[in-house]
Length: 259
Ligand code: CAA
Image 1: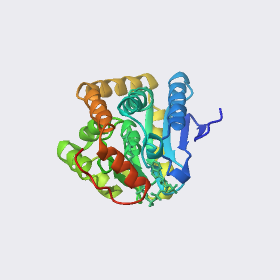
Image 2 (image 1 turned 135 degrees about the vertical axis):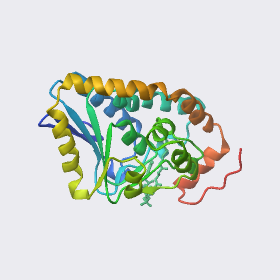
Image 3 (image 1 turned 30 degrees about the horizontal axis):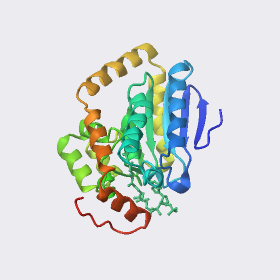
Image 4 (image 1 turned 180 degrees about the vertical axis):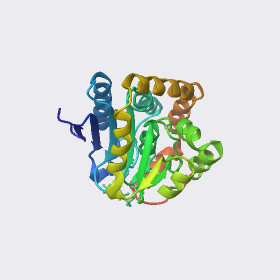
């Protein structure tokens, strides 16, 4: 099947998904999210697929977040719908999947990009990768599960620091705090993902699926995505959101007014 913004290949029981919007640093616009949702559905239905690798096109970015240009004019309702659809059809669909997804993070993984990586079951990054949830610089909060999944992966203290400072961290730091399973060179990135899925492929698929289901059931019990969606969408009603997004588009620093 042909996609506008994805490259999808099945080889040796592994499905390779490359997000292919290199000029926009592979930002997740609606078309890309819809296409991802379609592929994720097919992964569940296709017995030939035993694992998935998601990466980004080029050497600069995995995914630099949700597409800021696309949601710049959204109001509260459209902001809410953006988060609900994204979470249901893509992010939670990956996290709750019965096959292992590996994020091969080949550069910037920011905002929705890091959230996509965190929805995956295993994260490997190249040494040049930069990771962060910088939404508060836009007058927003993470809306694709980031407040919950980052906290689960690295603990509350580090998650609060990363989300409220919006500071980016290196791959080495990401590995140290448990956000990444491995850091490797850009050349080794896909090989490392294949090595891990190579082991998983030899295990009993029904047992792997049952393990994923059990682990995820516990994670879901301690996650509150509803409060995140409310917080995310309420930001769309603020002047600080309009200022944050305008500042990004005009390539300047924002001036927030707490309104
Ligand atoms: N959405 C739309 N376009 C984006 C984008 C995004 N998230 N990130 C980068 N781009 C575009 C830039 O606008 C630029 O386009 P133009 O050439 O048309 O100007 C192009 O990609 C290249 O980016 P830069 O010129 O900014 O490259 P840089 O090397 O100077 O900076 C960067 C790289 C630090 C990653 C910077 O692009 C950046 O900060 N991007 C935004 C990161 C971000 O805030 N992500 C969170 C988005 S909100 C979100 O994800 C919400 C959610 O949880 C649901």
